Image (cartoon, rainbow, N blue to C red; front, side):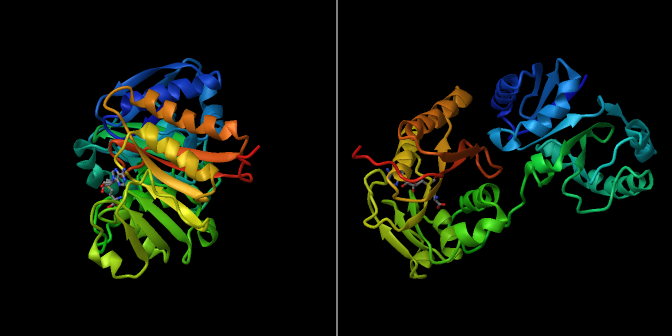
Length: 362
Ligand SMILES: C[S@@+](CC[C@H](N)C(=O)[O-])C[C@H]1O[C@@H](n2cnc3c(N)ncnc32)[C@H](O)[C@@H]1O
């Protein structure tokens, strides 16, 4: 049976499943879910196999919050022999279609990770054989399809494809970022990933550049501030907790010990607002909408903490509250949310207004 396979953080299969089922139904595509608990893999089996191709092309992956990556299956689970695995895969795949890239994938679990050496070794002869059968074209074809080989074990693989323009550029949707030694906290990787994910590289010169002013709410000890400072920004860091000395010594950081919900910038010259306060997500979402609507910042990246239960519903409610606030003032906006790889019990949101600020006096 044809399925859309989605990768998510292990433990979030229910949310990822609920989301694909709901959003596919908006496109009149229906199916049933098979969840592998704590495996970070969701199978959305399609009632009508013919609808899968259009769905993975039409429905933007960046509109799915909990899915890191996806593909449409080409095969059921293939049982591999102990020898001649490559030949077995090529035989099932045939050579009707061409792919721009091969991705060797596993579950994002310890068992999955233990397969990575096996996958690396198999990738070399598999790529060669795919090239020989003309199934794999030359590198760098960004427009083409990506062939996914999801190894459930050394003996089982599922093959599928995604389209390059609507899938993650990273294997299993996981960007491998290097922890910068000078950062005072590991949280730094969350903002690093968020910039990478939400802001296209070719816009970094105008949207993420040195000389900009930024505000970091809930900044201590300074992992997020570090990301702003290293990009040459001037940062106002709001937190009652202490900021790392190394950051204060750069001369780029002003630390204000106060409540992030009470701080309002004196001048309208702040470009970035980032916020990692551990606070009720409803309160944070409301605060972010207010900052944007009042023009206190141009763009915001913030985390919304997830509750223990009803996580998908809560996220939807929080985002809807922001959309309602923007709609009330008739402004155009961009609002994307993602459960990023370096996120745990939170999602990351990017928001900005695309039309002039509302006139509150009217
Ligand atoms: C997860 S930590 C932030 C880590 C930081 N982003 C980093 O990378 O180092 C959350 C911070 O939010 C701060 N915080 C929570 N509520 C706050 C509030 N109402 N106003 C200001 N800071 C707050 C806490 O003091 C804590 O330092």
